[in-house]
Length: 278
Ligand code: SAM
Image 1: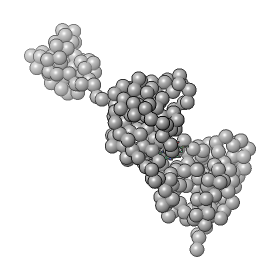
Image 2: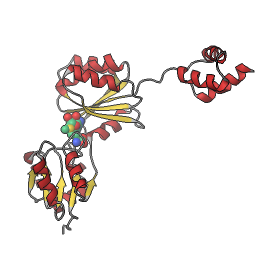
Image 3: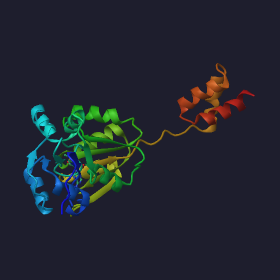
Image 4: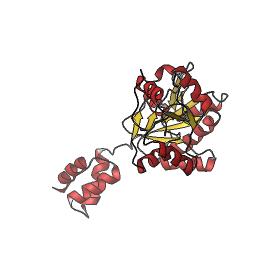
């Protein structure tokens, strides 16, 4: 027996390749919804038939007109409307952002049923730092804009996660070598599907590998580790810099200036500055 869902917008994550990854609450929500918004009725029709969800489907994407969006929003007061995308989590390089904003602005409830997303799945496979990461979605396709976008990310001390297509992979990796330098990286492909693979190496190694082979088939996520931390100065370098700074500044100011310049902890610089100024 399917329970009635609360009215409002229900964001539902669906599998990124393996139907077994559809969560129980996701399936229940889709079976109980009054209407299901989809990107492509053929793609989502298969998933909905698989779980016997019978609500009518309507096409929705963020290019839908404001009028269409407002017609959907007007339903949310008394209908449970589910939003899914072709695969993974709606709103993540997929439609939904404008609809969630419009639903909230009109005071309607917004619920989420979290689940698969290629970005998190790739991050868990890559073996690169996960404490701080930036999801960059798809880079712009044109080389100049792509280079500018990568240059913006180059200084960031975080792992980068980017969506990419097979035909563009080799060029993107080559540009990354140029603009991001030597870093550990991973190319995760067809995650959760039959031909899942995660190839790891430095950006140079990966760029060479894909430059010398036909474009890989299927769906791809590139994960790039953070830039190596600048090497910390040794004691002799620290002392030289502090002696010069102490000829102009108090120990605490000298320590602050040198710590910043040489990328050493301020506590270490201050302890040394006190020693040197005795
Ligand atoms: N909303 C989706 C999500 O949460 O992952 C992403 C949608 S975006 C339009 C599609 C891109 O996600 C693909 O081009 C690919 O870069 C990545 N992707 C989706 N499924 C994937 C999979 N099974 N393996 C690797 N990458 C995948």
